[in-house]
Amino acid sequence: MTTFKKLTIFLFLSICLSSSWANNTHDDFLKCLSQKTMNSNSMSQVIITPKNSSYSTIYNSFSGNLRITSDFKPSIIFTPNDESQIQAAIHCSKKHDLQIRIRGGGHDYEGLSYISEIPFVIIDLRNLRSISIDTEDKTAWIQAGATLGEVYYRIAEKSKTLAFVAGVCPTVGVGGHFSGGGYGMMSRKFGTAADNIIDAKLIDANGKIHDRESMGEDLFWAIRGGGGTSFGLITSWKVKLLDIPEKVTVFNVTRTLEQNATQLVYKWQHIAHKVDDSLLLRLFLRSSQSPFSRGQRTIHAFFTTLFLGGVDELLPEMRKSFPELGLVKEDCIEMSWIESILFFAGFPSGSPIELLPIIWKLTTNNQTGFFKGKSDYVQRPISINGLEGIWKLFNQVGENAAELQLSPYGGELSEFSESETPFPHRDGNIFMIHYSVNWEKMESSEKHLSWIRKLYGYMARYVSKSPRAAYFNYRDLDLGVNNKGNTSYAQARIWGEKYFKNNFDRLVKVKTKVDPTNFFRNEQSIPPLLSKA
Image 1 (cartoon, helix red, strand yellow):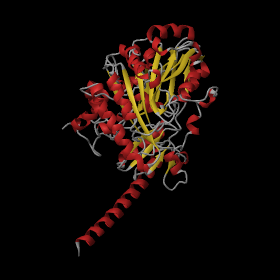
Image 2 (cartoon, helix red, strand yellow; image 1 turned 90 degrees about the horizontal axis):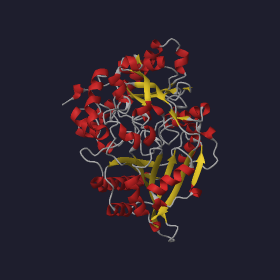
Image 3 (cartoon, rainbow, N blue to C red; image 1 turned 180 degrees about the vertical axis):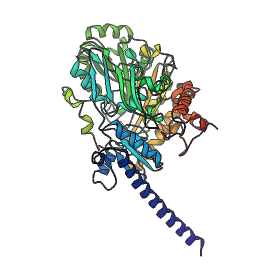
Image 4 (tube, helix red, strand yellow; image 1 turned 60 degrees about the vertical axis):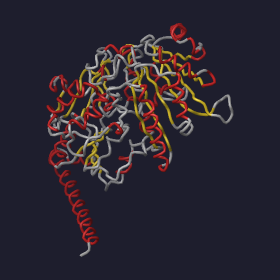
């Protein structure tokens, strides 16, 4: 028999055996679920397999980045209605050696909530989205499947002077966002979302349900910025609500290179982290057509700002700190905090706030393009020459294809020590950079990925070092990945210290204690110390 024939037979048998094993595991898992639950009828409503007509719709519903593709799909998508069903799914996944991926809003930059190269089940939290607001106690219990838009809306329903600090995108799920830190437009005043979490409910690898008291302070520390899916499945969070004025002020002022944008960006770096804590001056940089030179591109700098107060308080602060911007009263809009959520999410003026709790439904299955993101932290202002180098790189990519988002630090963010939570990006950072590039066609992928990596390489001289830090919620597999099986401590440390700095070792110790067999794992999950090598 020829070598070619032997190889063909081997591959055929391998595929058959693999398929048979997958089918048997799938069936055994379903039998296990039915045995572990009292009501098999209710379970049938939350189990979606490839045989269901809704499988593709459910799978693709929160996977909007076309760059994230995989030939490996989950054998089952599980959409539990309560914690007991999650307990059953964890037990059966563990028993039958199926990895689980936990999906809330599906905004993981690398798709780790819904793809895997080994047999897996998705636990999709879309049915766990209740929000209970206590205005007297100024707290809220939020289930992990809720979106930020729902949270903000439900708070505003109850009070005009209470809010919560988290991100600007209303379709982001709270589960991953809170557990990765959670930077937002009020972070200079109130810190991160994780800084304002006071309790949580978590199901561990043994299927036990814990609150803060029973999980202990080490695990409670770990899930507030260390990435919750390394340690268990978080079903809900209790957060502290924050006092705000009835009216806030926003503005979005644009300047181009012809309007001295380079000097303005340079000055912004010196003041944005020092201004009043109630003021957050965010900066977006893009390259598009110049309004002054037909057919020519230029850099557009968008100064996008929230101030917790009225315009008459804001203008004196801006004249004192940033007179070069030339802000005038006509640039500013007073509105309620909940209206500002729509403003920063890019909704047209006058959009109803009732969109916030339902926008996730309207964008379901909206796979519109390809995307790659990265992040950095800046501790000293970038020079004029450095900025001009960025402008040149922008001209090497398509118009409006790329964006730099510069988010100022300082204020309350600097009041916490680096070890207060696993989120270590505190005093010493003046701003964070979020790099992003978008494209429409698969054949353009390599070009755009090469461009953002080239920009990232150029920026090395201007950003934090030893380690070059990154924000966990802007997950980036370019930083390093785990093995498909148990990864080594040394391998995980490569990417882990970039996200968590000196907190990485403590996270490993917590992981070793609560999940020593590494049941909860993915390409960038914290490994147990048993894997240290």
